[in-house]
Amino acid sequence: AFPDREPILGFGGAFTEAAALNFWSLGKEGQDAAMELLFGKEGLGYSLGRTHMNSCDFCVQSYSFDDTDDDFNLTNFDPLLTHDLESGMIDMMLLATKTLRDAYPKETENPSLGGMRIIASPWSPPSWMKAPTEKDEDRGFMAHAENMTGSALPVCIRDGVGRDSEYAKSWALYFSKFISGYKNHGINFYGVTVQNEPEFPAPWDACAFDYYTQGDFIANHLGPQLAESHPDIKLLIFDHNKDHVIHWAKYLLDSNHPASQYIDGTAYHWYAGGMDRLLDGAQGNPNMHRLLSEFDVMNVDKKHLVLGSEACHCPSTGYAGGDLNIAWARASRNAHTILADLAAGSNGFIEWNLILDSVGGPNHLGNMCDSPLLAVPHRALGAQDVPVQLDFEHAGYPFGPVFGDQKTRDELNAIGIPAKYLDVGVVVQPMYYYVGHITKFVRPGSRAVNGLVDSSFKDRTFRPKGQSVAGGGINDLARNGIEVTVWPCEGSTRQEWNYNDDKQFQVFGNDWLGVPTTSCLSKRAEKDLGGL
Image (cartoon, rainbow, N blue to C red; front, top):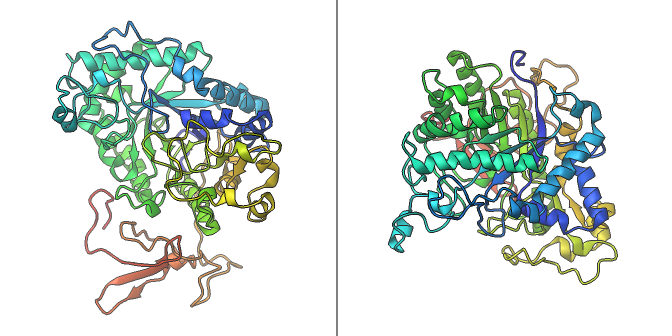
């Protein structure tokens, strides 16, 4: 489909502090099982990873590696990255790298296939580098932000991102020292993103940019710094949702912009811009196709990467909620999003946390989410005096009792949570298996091919009128905010429209809870998603 572009890099997940704490909470058998499940030959064979530079929300608390005010030269930067070492993040990455290398020696020995590729993303600089928010000023913090959570607008850096900004220059140097610190531990990052979710001044660790200020930060500080100290590191812009990816790319990749010479790729997340969690992973795919078209118009280098850098379902976990239909709907969404992204030209897909606890944490802001594997060391055979929640989890049970913990080993096995892994303290969720149908077989170096389901194909089973099976199942995207796209007839309920009494085209379906939904074709195009 894209013969002149870079091939598929692979698939993976994030090495967060939460993932590391849960992984190392398992016994040796559980750790071995989790590594094989995620990175081994018999498992998903993940070859991509992501980690946070400084803390993110999936940490026990905020932290940085230099908390000394106005230490512009970062004299007090911790070169050992002690926090990431002691939390187990670094050792988990090293073990994953070894597991992948042992499972796929030919891939890891081939430089073009790359072995384990990990990118790093910052959520927030140290608070002394950040401008105070309105809430900070109300509390009397006038010089700089009180902490790493939240962000001033339009940019979080204390004195902006102009050429003379001491704080922006120091923040760029921070990237370099962080990359060097990891390299000294044997982890060579593949790339970095400029900022996680720059459009969102989140209640957790955050730093806002718009595309103007991100461009200035790259051109004036980060680009030259990385070109000098780490020229092999790939720099990816944006790292936010698909609805605005084209606006950012058109501005930052313009060949006349001084930042463009330093940019190697565009990272994006799968979340819906309107915060409807049931649209996560579904909204924005036409924008991916438009993005590749814009690249052609702008003569963007064919080596420019497009990488899905974060995806997860929230809130809570399938194991905690207990509704098998929702667990499988989440799994289906993961797989369909990966396929749609690859068909639109994406080079890879990185899940959010690799492994969490039963309620989807720890997360120091209570933003509990799902992951393909869950650590439940208290369920392992022979476990003694292991608490149901470990001391790093402070959220308690925000969504009520955990369904899975109320079921026996055999009851869980009967609904698709394998007993053999539960016996070593690992819950393997449906999304794991769904995604595995792709990751095990679409290996690094693969390429997407064009394909359409068309009514002209013989022996194709179409959905009989009045039935909701055999051609796409129940339409779970009959929701306000989803784009309408035109495809050949393939028998799906998504292609059945009614012309109602109000002279509107109306579609019907159900959400994941089975609640009926309906929406109508808009009278106007949405500016961020384009269209007719």
